[in-house]
Image (cartoon, rainbow, N blue to C red; front, side, top):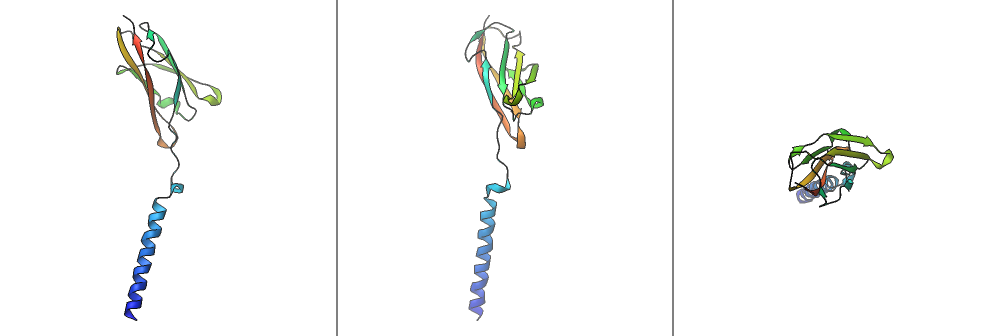
Length: 128
């Protein structure tokens, strides 16, 4: 009789651990992360541009516009963010005039829904 109760107890414990493991791995308990995306880079990748040139790109609709940040060669830039219907946001700015004769990455970061962080960017050559 004691052995039967002992086996039942182990069976019960095993079932509890297994069901907890399945629940932990379930994707229904958390929402999917849709990172902000960045497209339509102007000027195009690796294009040579004049000092102080304008740049622009599109940020996806799931981007929180007030979190969009752009640095160029580590320097922060001032941005204009305009809504584009359901397409997202048109983001524009200018390349700092202190950057000359180098390749520089226009680096973008932003937050989206569900605390999803996105990043992107492209490389341009800045003329002398």
